[in-house]
Amino acid sequence: MCGMSHFKAPPKKNLGQHFLTDRSIIEHIVHSVDPKPGDILVEIGPGQGAITFPLLKKNGSLTVIEFDRDLITPLSEAAHGIGELTIVHKDVLQVDFGKLAGENHIRLVGNLPYNISTPILFHVLEHCTQVRDMHFMLQKEVVDRMAAEPGSKIYGRLSVMLQAVCEVIPLFDVPPQSFNPPPKVDSAVVRLIPRDPAQVGIRDAVMFAAVVRDAFGQRRKTLRNALSRLCTGEQLQAAGIKPETRAEQLPVSSFVHLANFLSDAPA
Ligand code: SAM
Image 1 (cartoon, rainbow, N blue to C red):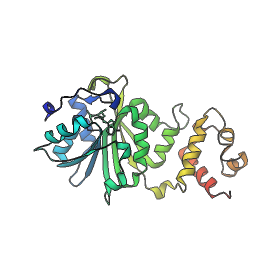
Image 2: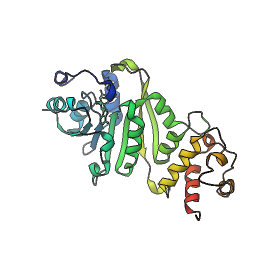
Image 3: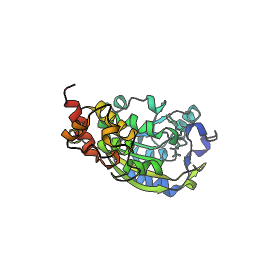
Image 4: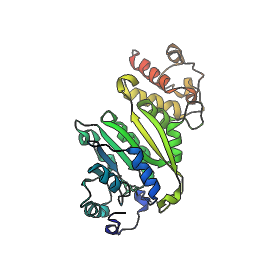
C-alpha cells in the first residue's frame, strides 16, 4: 500500500479507527464507487488512506475530511506523486457540505467512524440536494435498519428518514477481520442516491421529522396515541390513515402525506 510507512500513530478507539486492510474489499469499494473523470469526490475519515490512495490514483484529485491531527501530515506526505489531495482538518459534523460542494454535485465516500455514524448520516442529508451519491461502510446492523421495509421489526426512524430522501442500496457485507483492529460487529457497504426533492414532495421538513420521531418514539402504541402531541385521531382519519395503525406498518409515502396534511391544517 502506497505510503503506509508515513503512518506511525496506533489506531485511536475514541475516533472509531478501524483501518481497512483487506485488499479485495478495498478494490470492491473502489469498483463500486467507479470514479469517472470530472467527478468531485469527498472522503469522510480517510484514516491511513486505505481507500483514499486507490481513489486518488484513479481520479487524480480528492478532498478528504479528517479529525485526527496525527494523520494530517502523513496523509499529505503519502499523497505526493499520486494526485491532488485536499485535506480538510475538521470534525465532519462541523463541515458545511453545501459550501464544500458549491455549484457542484459531490460524491461522498467513507468508512465511517461507527460511534457517530447516525449523526453523520443526518448531517449529510441536510445537504443531499448537492450530493450525487454516497458510498458508506457502516455497521451491518445500521445498514439493515436503513434499508428495512414496513412490517419489519427493524423498520424505524432511520429507515423512514433515509428512504424518504434517498434510494438505499445495500451492496455487500464486510467481516471484522478485514480491519485493523477488527471491530466487534459485522460491517456492510451501502450506496445512497438522493431522490429529486420535487418527487419526494416533503413540504415541511420540520413537521416531517417530528411526525417520524413521535411515531417511532413509542412504536408499540397506535398512531393515535403515539402522535397525540401532533394530531388527533380524526385528523389521522381525514389524512386517510387508520388511527389504530402502528408506525412500523406505515409506508414512507404515508409519513410524507401525513406530515404535509398536518402542515397544511389550520393551527
Ligand atoms: N478510511 C480509513 C480506512 O478505511 O481504513 C479509516 C476509517 S476509520 C473507521 C474512521 C476514520 O474517521 C478515522 O480515520 C477517524 O480518525 C476519522 N474520524 C473519526 N471521527 C471523525 C470526525 N468527527 N470527523 C472526521 N473524521 C473523523
